[in-house]
Image 1 (cartoon, helix red, strand yellow):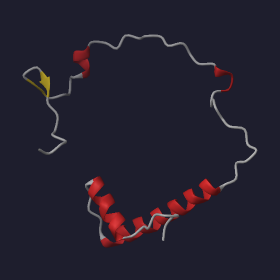
Image 2: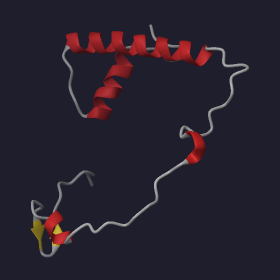
Image 3: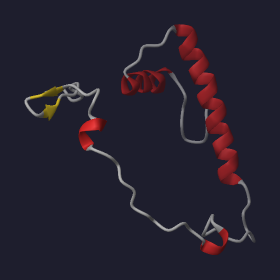
Length: 99
């Protein structure tokens, strides 16, 4: 089950759960395996699509017209920290990396 070269099995789902720091029920795991297999099959079809003779798209903005960058005042930085927890002059945030 799955796209070429990738087996969508329990081991992959457990790894994805670990990466996302979530725990799925048995029903959710089965649904995720089905959905991942469908996505990988679709992506393999897209990769195999013939694009010979098609002009390469280099610029998604035809004519290359872009707006001019104009600096704008952003206000007082202290206003942006109005809801932040500040301790000892530093913004305090939750720990995201374990020692």
